[in-house]
Length: 192
Image (cartoon, rainbow, N blue to C red; front, top):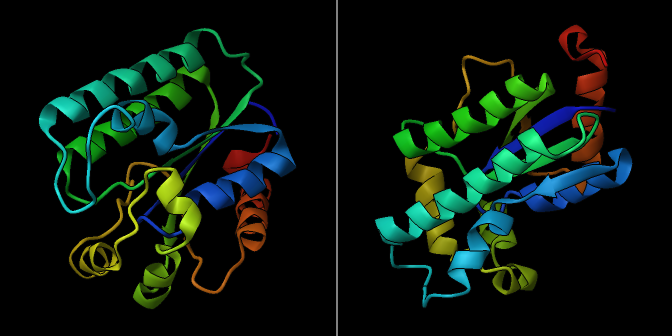
């Protein structure tokens, strides 16, 4: 696999980072996890998972995101593969803009681009969100937040692009990674 950009989109607790790690092992890809972008700022401020972050915090995180995207576009070798992860919500303008920036990056690099919507049952999300390693990485660990999001929101559907929706409720990260890579290999527009 060369010059491929996979974008894993799903609610907190879906397993985006864990699946990205499995794909990276199989494809020599670099992971651009949303916490790689968020945590340099989140580590500097006092946050709790029940209080919303200020616009200034999101602005600073946006600056870091742009630096990373610019670096991938202008410095990273063209045959490099990248796996992005994020929780993007349908109808949220800011999330749609973030998605658009990643899609534009793929277009500018002339990369194979596959957005993947990861779905998971509410019960399983609430179980996974409690995993201890999530707290270390400044991730949401509140099951009530997972329940509220699952009931009230929908993961972004990038309708202008061909995308894969994958229910990972009963899949291991390794199984999900293989399904995603098989999809890329089987779909003519992704032929590498």
